[in-house]
Image (cartoon, rainbow, N blue to C red; front, side):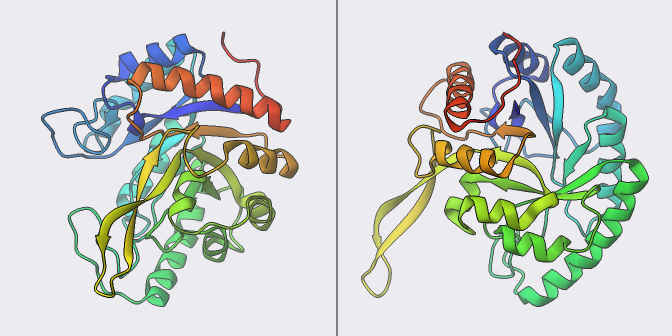
Length: 301
């Protein structure tokens, strides 16, 4: 098992700073965020993120990203793409970029639920069966294109999308070649929606379990009530050690399943300064993985 950081969670660092800090801390790899984003007065996870590579003109940045990553001694754990499965032109670009970088895997997003507002767009109102059937056709095409490039397209388990759970992701991909499509299991996202017992979910996915994301979350009472007078809860991101998800139990399930791939951290908590947060996360992940009986790479320190 190796550990990397998704650069959505390192918004204050320019790419050269990100690889320097992560390499010095002893991380094995990095997962670059590639998307067009809004500007912001201050760097943020989703806007003004300095460690994000723009999708527009992406191809002009690939040589630079490859050079600074390898020069720092880091590996690519994959690419954190945002191209949606029905945008075939950008999906194909992301697959080609992943092949050129030698990154092996790239996330391809699935549609939000018809009841979910997403980004700056209102809820579409499209029924789930229609969204799902269209996405299945998209992924049949994506699997062929991924095979053409010799890479793997990944579906992330993400709340408020058509693939919030392992079960739904398996339905989407079942029968497609697991050498070229797979699933990102995500501890934190599943605390919000889609939670299934860890080990059975891994067993269900089988060869489709291709990648793991780790972050944590909590549900808090908002202090508000709905029209019936019942309490309204909201989810918030939390540090790995203090969220509702047990990283130790998660790692024990990965060990029982025999997972030996990448674990990518995307910590969106802000309790600690960024450099302290990433360094502490690596220490915690390595010690917790050892407790769980996982075989961990020797590391760079």
